[in-house]
Amino acid sequence: MNKSKPMFYGWWMVIICYPLCVMPIAFVSFGFGFLINPLSTEFGWTVTQIAIISSFIRLEGGFLDPIGGFIIDRWGPKKIIIGGQFIIGLGLILTSQVTELWQFYAAMMLTNAGSAVGSFFACRALIVRWFVRTRGRAMGFMTPAASAGQLLLPIVAFTITKLGWSDALLVLGLAIWAICVPLSFVVRDDPYTYGLLPDGDSPEELEVSSDQPNADGTPKRITEQGVQWQQAIRFQAFWMLGCSVAGLL
Image 1 (cartoon, one colour):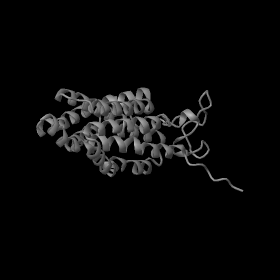
Image 2 (cartoon, one colour):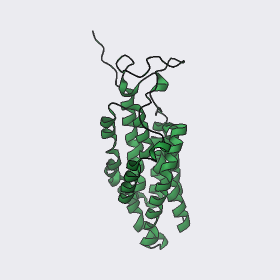
Image 3 (cartoon, rainbow, N blue to C red):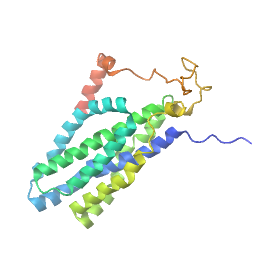
Image 4 (spheres, rainbow, N blue to C red):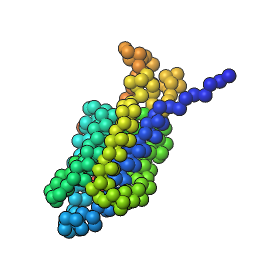
């Protein structure tokens, strides 16, 4: 009797990435608008004073993206996701305690720093490591997580309405710590460390440049997956893509 092949662990990575993306995006990005009126009413801050943090956050994200790419390459997605999710929770908790405008700015910048690097950005890097041949399919399943955060907006709005903005942010921060941080520890940086190949292929099913395993018995890595950043900056396509994306931000 033939035994069915177990689901490739990379697909578990896709599933795990959903809450790691959906919750921060809902709580930090999409949910920000719910804070404007309560903060303005309680502290007397103008809408402009509150909303201008959105511009600071976008500017911060632009600076953090290349830094995030560097540290993910150096330390792997798992550590960055764990640290990022912890910072998101911490930032939300600190935001719940602000009494001055500068404190609000600082807490929100901290929260966004964790979200910018340790959420969707790091999860995409993780999926790229686990899939090569079926990468398009994997990314197709994971990418909607960026928009799925809108599904949690009624919960965010209800929590703020019932508890008030301060207690609501405290609860949302603790929820990140209770759900996303533990899930982050289930993340695995890449399949090679565990003797696997991307896409769930076995060494017999996938022809690689060298059929000899590493000294420790793990499969050889597939190296033709991209280029180094030093090479990328020499390509016209890199700058054209960067300019087009910057224009959309």
